[in-house]
Length: 206
Image 1 (cartoon, rainbow, N blue to C red):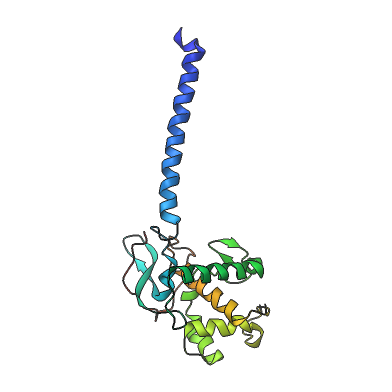
Image 2 (cartoon, rainbow, N blue to C red):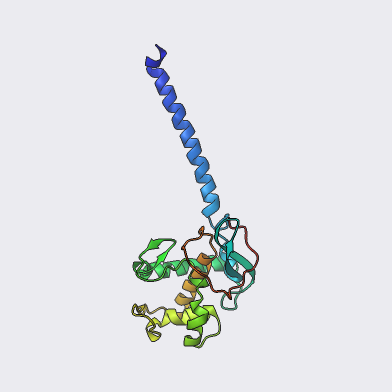
């Protein structure tokens, strides 16, 4: 019978493999389009020049980032290459100081200290750190804290002084502002953003 013919089974296996490979390629292309910088879920690096908010989207039943009007980081408008270089430096600083030994970003790392995925949007910067550091912007408060965390002890778990330079601290802040603009499908769950953060115009981050 034909069902005993090895050629039949070999052809069936090749056909199945071909279909699965085609599906895998299609899914990979779609995923890359969603998670790549400038893709559906990940804004371009120049988003650090804009106001970033976080709202509950009823249609998706989860919180999503919003991209508003002009809000230059440290009062400077970065072009595409400058923004990318600054954010990459911030990521390298986080890696070089082993920040993920205590913190996590996008679910990767430890949970001894707060998750940093949406750190830029945390209301604690305006409510606590701006007054404590005697600064007037979220970005400046973050820089002041990152440079001398041991100067502002607040909880039983204190962040060690990592001896960041001002430029390194600014780069970390740029990285954290960018990560806060990424649509992480509601992650981290339960995070509540600063209510004073401008809602802006909801970006196409879905």
